[in-house]
Length: 355
Image (tube, rainbow, N blue to C red; front, side):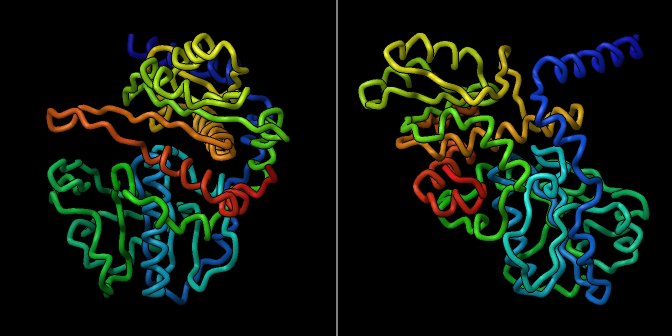
């Protein structure tokens, strides 16, 4: 029975690939390199390493990488970025590159070949003692809600360190989620260091050039799967404010998109063509085929580029049940979209495409 269920899951995943995945994105996936070029910049003479393992969504990833990058620059450490555990479920190097050389070495993918080297490194982090094997990491994590921290499962010690002071350890690991990232996303300097790979930028532009080429449009972003939004009430609220004939709707919920077409009948309602859920299943951070993760990540970046190119952007607050209280707030992705929409120079540099 277990084998049959596994077979059904595999068949369903490949059915999804065949039915929903864009052919151009799939070709890009199969062409992508298996080894990050930054590995060539590995500095064997500098044993001081900071391994950044962010957890969470796209905004959390960017915020935590930027935080670790600042620490690595300040204390002259090689920074290794491992986003396989994050909502990306993939390597950072397949989507982004450094805009310009930095004084510290940065590896945008964690190469498994480094594990035997890191296993010999000395670390003062108590949670990492005997937890770095020659072929894999030997630690598991539990999340402590009260301290908003990931703990090593055996010792129940945090897998992070004080970012405000130097550390004598050869190896430091920052395994953390910031939770909706920084309150003030405008302080995020990430867009000054990395940009989207040219190949992905080209895919993005050709997917939505019918929207962004010479058209003024207003955009709506609705997230309503794992987090909830009363999008019908939100549509009613913003309708009097919309003045452009073209509206872009980006959402992870197919019902929200279909209802927007019905509600804004006097407008031309467009989408980026990104996959949306019909059963409220969240789209990111789930274990699935690598090609599906790659496809959804490229679609996420496509939505971000399209939303941030609008003349006006409307984003609904999401509702989460937390500590038995309902707390409406903007998601980290929404904050990034708002920030790039207000700073078109950073948007152009980050995506490397013309609007």
